[in-house]
Length: 379
Image (tube, rainbow, N blue to C red; front, side, top):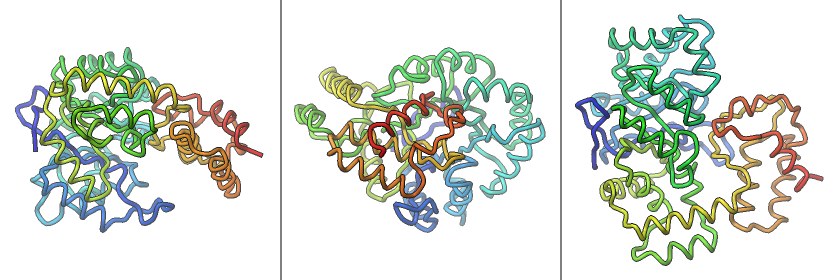
């Protein structure tokens, strides 16, 4: 497994990390975590050298941290770096931060979190946490050994990202980056800004929630077919991220053994600045194709859920984009939308409360998109 330096710290970390947000569930329709398979996947990943594990308080309904702990039982804790995140939406007073960290340490069955990140900072959560003196909390937690490194994950615009980077002596940050998001959120400029100030930069959504790894439209397949070497769509996406020398670790939400094997192989071959100018041109061409086809830039992260009115926002956007990007027959999309309606989850149930838009990391106009989709596919 290729390794890169962890920012200005002396340690090194593998370039591939395990993102424990999308571990397998008991069935495609279920949200219940398949704990035994998840533990097996995590242990297999560690065996392959994927020794950076990223979880959070809220992942899988609060079960992810405990499952990571189960995977590390039996003496494997010292083999890995564990990252988790402070759920800012549960912080109402300064002492809540110490209480939540204590709860997470208990869930993870560890005395120290290697990387503790402020979760999903944006223009609302950052000033809120500052009002609760979060930076003093981080100082205390580092000083008493509850956390080793302090960082933050980010979902907002570049100017705020730079402001946060400059506000504290951070060790690391976690940003969304893939070949479609070069100018979105922190983007390439944010990556270089943080790395230039000595932060280790971890990457989430390298394949845009799997959208860059699945079935490709014919015009995209035609572009990849012109490449001198055959690669899967996932490999093209991961190689593009690892091509950036400022990237420290890429988090992949692997939920099959095959994905672990494929990603591990790519991680051992994808060196910084290794893509040729011709290959980069192909990726730019694919980017433009997708930009022309995508209707709603939803990554499927689920921060908008649960909707108070029961609208299946993520599922609706996914099916809508699938139809647009992959030329699905209109009747298939209408049939799926009817399936949502039968389960009282279609967009007609939206009460216009705006909770989804306040939580959306992509700052999407969710309500307007839902109205458009209902007009197109509703009764």
